[in-house]
Length: 379
Ligand code: CAA
Image 1 (cartoon, rainbow, N blue to C red):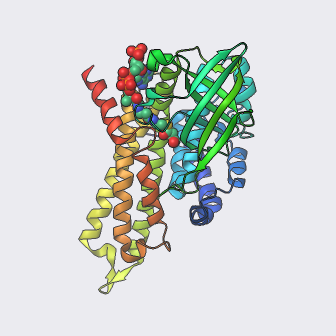
Image 2: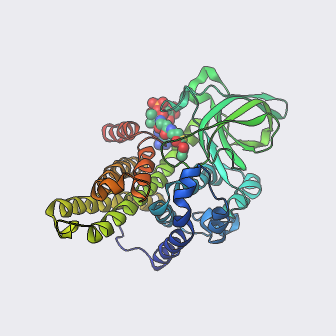
Image 3: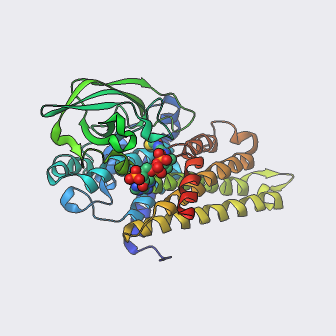
């Protein structure tokens, strides 16, 4: 394990932190309030190369590693959970499966503009009756001549209405359950592909979450990703990497709330002294810092294993479990340290507490992460 980041990774952190603090942080509260993302921020992220961090330059990326990607997601999360999941869903859930399972033609056609940030990516997996039980999907894809015909709906899709390219998982043979699922690349604007309801959420309110509706939606046969029947495997491998992204988002939210609480505790005076002079506050700060560092090390270990082509499924689940529960715990303490002010929208910690909650739910609930970890321990 390497405990020192490279000069390149440190430089990336500095660049993303500056960008996040100057460009995103001033807009985060308003975007949350309005439930609308300012997409000019995406264009700026693309200019910085954030839209294609862990992909080779020949595919429009910047050729860095997943550790760097995790650092960038963390730094966005430190000021805005919605910006953070935008990048994570784009990179982990759409670009990565195309990069890993796509044909050369698919990579040139879809990965290049996505990695360059000209296009935004999303993945359609979850359905009304297929959440944790991801293999229970009902959306079907039937081969008809040279086309697959998609029918069904996907819900809770991050980057939902704004994305241009979607990796959609469908059942091609319902009799085979998860072994009868397949992955497809679907472009926005394909006839029969429309958007349903927009979700109004507790947190990450600026993140664009929509229902996708497919009605007799015909896509070319060559948009099959990998082979028929590979859908569930593609999903599981994609989610292994995605969990590093969500863990990094949770870490960023926790770090952001901690930084706010630390600064506030030094300036807020009660009983004639700053509140940080009280041991009760000091112990909270010490515990928050320890938990954040522990989560960070788990995330970096999972990213390191992925970058060095070693198995990392269990480590990604551990990182996601610990980081998301840390984010919830740390943000709750940050609100506590802010007292009554922390409960108002005057300070960002209440938004951070709301944003933290989803990290314990999406890309596998904490309970699913424990199932994955235990299954790896017992196999
Ligand atoms: N890598 C490769 N293959 C894997 C795998 C992995 N990590 N995990 C499982 N598999 C394979 C198994 O080897 C098995 O293969 P065979 O059929 O060839 O034997 C197959 O997948 C089925 O495995 P299981 O029997 O373990 O599958 P299961 O149905 O019991 O489910 C689960 C396992 C871990 C619970 C899985 O369903 C899961 O991860 N559920 C959570 C789904 C999830 O995370 N959804 C998130 C939605 S996306 C999202 O949230 C995005 C967003 O908004 C940002």
